[in-house]
Each structure stands twice: as structure tokens, then as C-alpha cells.
Length: 554
Image (cartoon, rainbow, N blue to C red; front, side, top):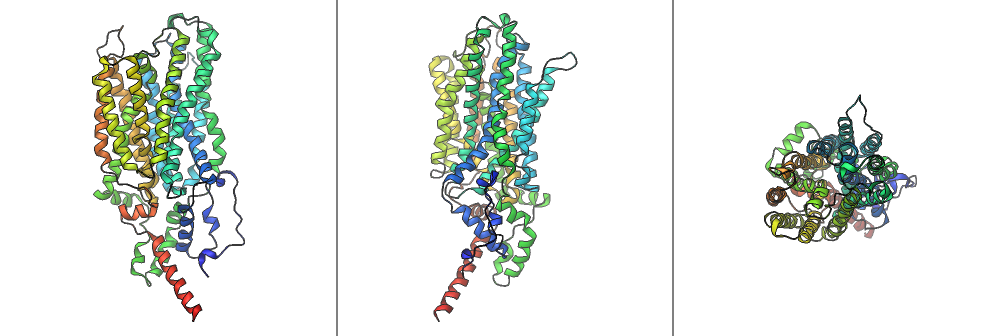
């Protein structure tokens, strides 16, 4: 009798909580004594699944958390404009603006490295959900802060943004690798891209909440023709608005928290890492049948093995490629997206001095950019990433971003305001139908299970280092040598600098191999030289079944 036909009568599938999407494949095949065969059956069921309701639930559970991350990051873009009227009469000091916006990226770097390592060390299940708890708590605390003679509001607010950033950072490697390890091979790229596309939905939600809040407080804002005239009820309205805007970001996280805390352990992690010693014993026994069986068990995860593995150029170049590409992208991505309000005002879209009109136009401008450029870009990636491939999309994306930023930068003063807005929308499209999506997907697939989360965390953290550089160094150049009545005069040259980073991204992408329509084990065998044990076991059982069938016929 074939092992596939053996059904455990004791197993009852548990579909409660997160297990409704991230199923307990370990429990399903726990009755199979041979750990290699148990591993093969579990991975085959995952890899050969179609695209259905289970995969949609997976996208929603992992994606809702990502929506929260994106909302929290980009809500500050509008929230800081509201804070400016509360504490600085409409003109927040440039250093304070930079500090508030860059603080989240600082925390994100720490979270990506810390949670990335923890998911490889402790396991996916034990860590997933903790990052949302950090985000929710830090978001609530931000909304409760107020000015006092005893404390500095900016310092405490920035600290809370760093803590929130740690939680946001943790979601990058965790959502990517968990989606990857539970996804069917045929549509793995689309599933991961769909999870990541919730970043666009988070930006959309931020814009919608901002518009609703601003419209609700219209009567308290409209009388103030300038920031200096925003007094009394105008200040109170802005103070309440930024708290509502930022605080609303934890709502999707609260919804997703229960499901994340109750997922099953990733079968790849459980079988490759947790059962490593058991697999080694079986491999020694299998070596008597097939000499190559000695190689079916990868080295045990350790710091020495990590450095030994990535000290080899064939492996190091992949890490340089994923980390370097993410770094190059985020220099421009966060440098521009965290300053969308400034850019919209500079190109003339939100240039009014009236408090209500300025805030409303900034929020509406964000919605236009997201709906016209960002969301279609995410959807184009979902539709093509498993057919065109990850690497071609990333290469073409970097190329188009280089061209667009060069046009905006060098022809800035010859372009009309509508032309600038149109080019900026196209730029948003190719960011997301390009490296912004693929830099998230590729690190979640390309590395061995024992280091997948750590390497993804390193790659993502490199991106946030780029974001920090963009905010603290390049971003501050927008006012370089500008007169007081001509702010942001250096914006065209900043665009030109960003174009250089996009050009460098083309070269880092060349270091990355293609991963479409390959199982994670096939990827690991091809690019990391570690034997795909599922093939060896499958061949062995096929031989045994042929022998059994021939005996039956006799």
C-alpha cells in the first residue's frame, strides 16, 4: 500500500483561528513514522495546491498586518502637517520633521534584524503576532501623549515611533517567509505580492481617514487663512485630528492579531530545523541504500555555519543583491513617499495657505497618487510575477524609475504642474510594478529555511538604512541654498540624486537569480548546493511501489 493512501483515523483537522489559512500539515502527517516521507508528503500538499479560499485567507491574515504597517508609516506624512498647526503655527522646524519621520525607520531596522533572527532561532509560530502587539501598544501610547513642562513632546513621541518601528520591522521578514513557506509553488509570487500590496491599501486607508477627519472638522479649520491664524478651536481640531488619524492605524492590527497568534508552525521550519537531529539519524541509515543520502540534511543552523555559508561568493552575491537592491530602492521610495505633502505643494497641487484647503488637498493628492499609480502597480505585479518572473520585473522597474527621475530632475523647470504630477504618478506605478514588490518577494524565497528569516531581515534592514540616509542626508537638501520665500528649490537636484540610486539598483539586481515556478527546495538545491530530499525520497518510494506491484502480479 502506498504511503500517500495511509490515513490517520486519529487526526482531526483544526481550522480555528490562524489555522484556517496556515494549516497544521505537521499534525496531518504525524502518523507517518519516516520523517523524510512525512516531510515529502507535507511539502507536496503545499506545493501542489491550487489557488482557492485557503490562499485568500492567507493573504488577508498576513496582509492586514502589513496594511497596519503601511498605514502607520505613511499616516505620519499627513499627521505631521496637522501637528505643525498645533505646536509650531503651521511651520514645523525641518530638523523636527526629519526626526519624527526618520524615527520609525530607525526602529524598523532594529525590528527587521531582531525579529528576523528570532524567527529562525525560536520558530515562526512563536514569534508571529508579537510584532503586532508592539505596533498596537506603541500606536495607542502615541495618541495619548501631550505637552507638559516636565517632558519634551517631540522626544517622547519620537521614542514611541521607534518602538512602533520595531514592531513594523518585524512584520517584513515574518509575513514574507511565512507566506512563502505556506504557498503553492505555481502562485507563490502572486500570493506574496498580494500580501505586500496591502501596503498600498494601507496608504489608501490613511488617505481616506485623513479626508474624512479633515472634512468633519471643516468648520473649525476654514476660518484660518494662514498657520498664524490657526488659534483656539483650530488648534484643538488639529490636535484631535492627528490623534484620530494615527490611532486608527491599530484597528486592522487588532483584527489580525488573534489569527496570527494561532497559526500552525511552518512545516518547512518544523521539519528542517526542529527535527534536524532526527533527520540526521535517518540520513545515516539511508546512506546504506543510497550514498547521496548523507547530503540530504543541511548543516545545523549556527553563527559559524551562517558566516561559513555566506562567506562563499555564490551565496554572498545573492545577499548583496537582495540587500543592495532594497537599499537603492528605499533611498528614493521613502525619500519621496514620506515627503509627498511637500512634493505636492512644490508642484502646485496643494499650495494654498488656508489651513483647511491645504490639509484637504494634501490628503486628496495622496489618494490620487495611490489610486492612479501605486495600486495599479501592485496589481500588475500580482498578475505577472509568476509568468514574467521576479528578476525581469525588478530590472525593468529600476530602468523606468531611472528614466522618470532623470526627466523630472533635469526638465523640472520646463514641465507644467500637470506634467510633473503625471510623471510622479507613473513613477509610483513603476515603483510597485517593479523593485518595491520584488525586493520583498525574492528574499522570502531565495535562502535556505534555516536562514531565510535572518537573511530577509538583513535585506529589509538595508532598505531602511537607505530610507534613513534619504531622510537625514539627501532629503534635507531640498532647501539647500533656498531663499525663505522659495522653499524646496533644490528638489530637482534631489530627484537627480535619486535617479543615480535607481541606476545602481540595476546592477545589484544582476546578482539575483530567478526563482519563479520553483519549489523552495529546488531553489535551495540550485543556488545553495543543498540536496532536495523530497526528490530522493519520492524516487525511493516509487521504486518500492514498482517492486510491490511486480510481486503482486506474480
